[in-house]
Image 1: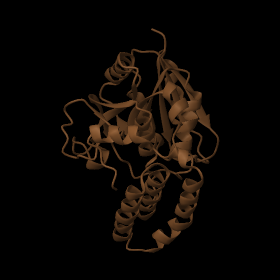
Image 2: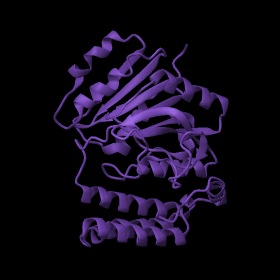
Image 3: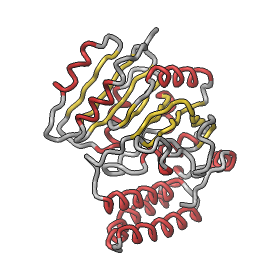
Length: 301
């Protein structure tokens, strides 16, 4: 079979977990390209990946530029290197029970329906064996995860993309800092172009959610606030902008116990508002809102 799918992984300060994740790919029966972007500034992990030479079905592309690109730019670099029709994006701290099923189901779903632009996975917490509420690809956290459904979100830890649609939607946002909400930004743009995001209940991965390589909670809350506000300002109606800024601003202050983070975000948000006033063609049209309504989506915060 010709190669149809690539797997892309970013890694940062979690070499042991990365190696563990990659070893679960060794049983793959499909020909795949594996693209690894090393975001460590000073640590070359090339020798840690030598075991991949023994796997005939995996072609490795390893990039180390001695720069921490963050999630969005790093994943954009992966996309630029993809030579296949589809790509599966994975975090470096996951367990994959059945990579062959995941590869096969992604290829089949993409080929069955050319309007499927992305595939969301069933991401379970490694400790509890159930989905963390923050990794359910829908605002309805009571949704039946045992059944497939169309949605308007996918989760960063594991998802798949049809490469050809990215010429219409654009890539991950390039100005979201090290990480935070980048997958929501891209998911919204996929829905806005009238493509589907399909959740596959049997595409299961377990997320270890390692603290290594992550920033302090306060900074994570700040990036989540800033980037979620950017999304609303760029694309959504003013009523959603106001609700996002207010509700998420209150949440940011509540979690950090500091108003400082709000003031830190003001210059960037002010700049976003100015860009919106000048360039209104980025605003989503009625197709996006019709799709969100059909999918029982939620945009208020």
